[in-house]
Amino acid sequence: MSENEIIEVTLHGRGGQTAITASQLLAQLAYEKGFKDTISIPIIGAERRGAPIQAFTKLSMNKPIKTYDSVVNPHYIMVFDTSLLDIPRIQDTIHDGVTILANSKEPFDTNKFGKNIRLFIVDATSICIERNFMHSSGPILNIPMLGAFGKVTGYYDLKIIEKVIRKEFGENRLEKNMSVARDAYKLVKEV
Image 1 (tube, rainbow, N blue to C red):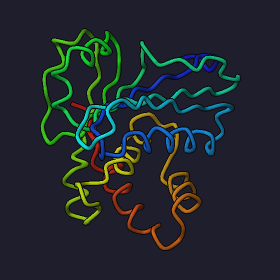
Image 2 (image 1 turned 90 degrees about the horizontal axis):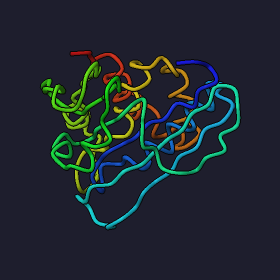
Image 3 (image 1 turned 180 degrees about the horizontal axis):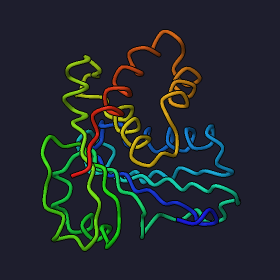
């Protein structure tokens, strides 16, 4: 990717899985790392837990972002729930050469989506369960997914994650958030 290119990320999740918050935090993480401009674009449809949701984040290393529309050709796709990959409109966002980061225990076949797809997996759900990083409807997946995304892309590291978490959630929630971020950063793998 050239430094003049705007990096586009699509996040697919279900209501309650914190994908929209992840999109907003991703923009903050990149900005703290030194990206010139970042923007988070949530798409909120049916506002209920479990409903499919999308969010988009655009990152620019050295120029302002002047488009505020949704992402149609992402460089990266973060999938919080792999059952969403069965939905045709989500399948349509996956194209040749994209990098997918999925919350998954097991690898899955990407050949049906296109060619030269890079797949990274991290079992963010198990990390959250082991660390009791939960809310009333289940695991809080945003921080482990962002930890893994930082490792996959190199766009930010654990120090930047710590800085943003401290700023957003305070000192008293820092260690619990960092424990899941560190686990995902360490455990994400390409398949």
